[in-house]
Amino acid sequence: MLTIVGCGNLNRSDDAVGVIVAQRLQQWLLSNPYPNVRVFDCGTAGMEVMFQARGSTSLIVIDASSSNSSGGTIYQVPGKVLENLPEVIYSLHNFRWDSALAVGRRIFGDNFPEDVTVYLIEAENLNFGLTLSSQIERAAEKVFWQITKKISQFNRQGPDLASC
Image 1: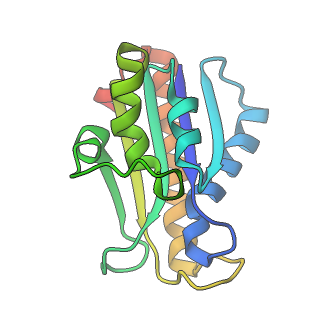
Image 2: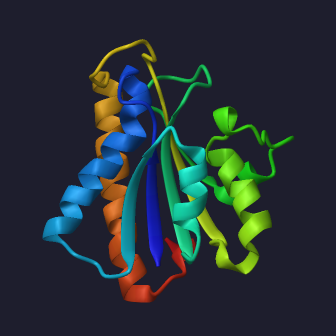
Image 3: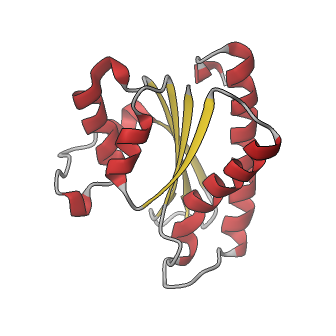
């Protein structure tokens, strides 16, 4: 099973990019059904990411980033890199998807996906607002098509997305 999770806040302009890509993938899957693919809009609920990932063989997370890079820059990061970040925060208020990767592995063990890829799209605007910046819209489009390609490869080759 491939699980795709979009994260972000729809009320904070570019922070919504992960949710918007996930919602678009959900619509795409209605016309292009794949039985082994699930897509979730997890918003800002890191704990939800952990529970939705459980039982999957592969996981893709999409979110905005704020690292002072150029807006619209796309980072594709292996989950192993992110789940080993220092000190996981266990407060539910601050429990994000990166915490979910580390804690999910500890709690669910072999029932948590080994193959995890995170797409981070550098935001330009994180102020209150309901639209994406034009650079972020273009980056979201690229990520959307990259993930549709991975979905197709996942279903042709089986659960090993490492070769994608």
